[in-house]
Length: 478
Image: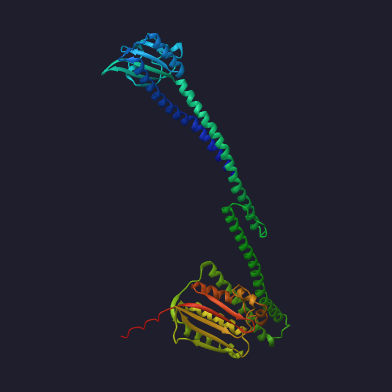
């Protein structure tokens, strides 16, 4: 079962709070308890040192009487809650003031219960071998004369007090943490509002876009990062919408360009079969059928070429060749068409030889497409100029006609697949609307640029660039 992000947030929050409380009440409480014990040991030792210096001298009582000393010890015991005992060198308690009479050890010999007790400076969690009714922290302070120990001052503090103090501190810490947890919960809610809710809205928008509802409105009132994501999603939807429109136009154009020749082929074939067209006229209509099949073949080849460009890129066979010679060869192939329209080709070369580095077969296809386009839209008895020049290691090739031109609002659309202006579709039905798209793909695959300049009723000029190359070296004479 998939867990929602909201549930994950809540689960993580509860897990963190529970784990923290568990650690605080186990390991944390133990550390706090140990810290208080160490502090208590230091405090007891300092108190023992102060009492020994004030009331005991060289292991004997000062001039004060025993009742007065005992009274002072009792007062201190009541104030600080610590048992105070004076023990002679043999281990007998000769002075004792206790919080509880149960732990009054006056006259008791401690060494009989624990022979090593007085050898320690501090003892934790001890009952002096069950001599005491409860566990204590004990500090043993030796009273010396020179290097000889004369007596011991023993201070005992109940462990229960330590545990109570540690628990009290920990309770306060837990209370503070619970207050912080409420703040964390508020922060989690803010994060939920700023992340989970926008993600849900963005997810819904993505689903709507996937269903083709590209007009679905996606809000833009999230945080900065979410706004960037929402902007990227909207941009993607716009591109998908454009692609959807393109696909519709693509299908419509392909259908149109395929339906026209197929209709002719079907109609004329059926007419010849049923005798509508007499046998003596079959040759004429077979030529028409052949022409239409050639149109279909050209359209199919161009579609396959564009598909290859998109999926695998254009495979390049780069070589060095003279672009001027290549233009001459390509131009010669259009001589008959130019003659039929009384169009003259003017080749203008700034240099006799101009070498470029490119795929010669692909560049020939570019020149042929541009020349075919120029002848198609040139006026009768006009001139087409092909001009080559170089500048900053770039070769510029220009194909300029003096024909009908391109409307201003159609300039940027000439590179679109299947795009044909109304003038084009009415003037020439041979075109597939793919020539300029293929031309642009080829030039850009070379890492170069192609541009168009046109004025309606005046003419059109296409200019593309190629990388200049050094002339190939001639083979050495043997």
